[in-house]
Image 1: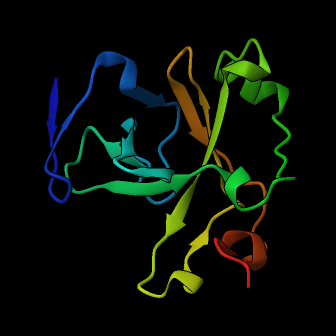
Image 2 (image 1 turned 45 degrees about the vertical axis):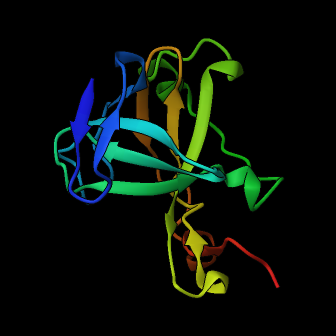
Length: 141
């Protein structure tokens, strides 16, 4: 299958790439179907692209690339909502704010996207509104 996007051209995907958000992302509550695709020759960043709006996409990354001891406590309610059976089912990603100056790139560790990779369900949760977590540097000096 193919998704025509505004900024990333045509993205090929299959049904297994589709993530259904149980609640839209902050500021994009009406968008609930996304695909997660790798970026060629890049192990750190991926593209989280809306299936419903060809102009909406986020650069995302694993929080563990920037903070090895990053932890998220999943509530019992969230575990049920995303039908999580095991820790192995869970993928955690965070949005990235790009900058021309690589030292100014940040990631939002305060609002991770939790994905059940087996059930293709996800949800963005807010765990902190601390400015240091919301704009956590991708590169530390």
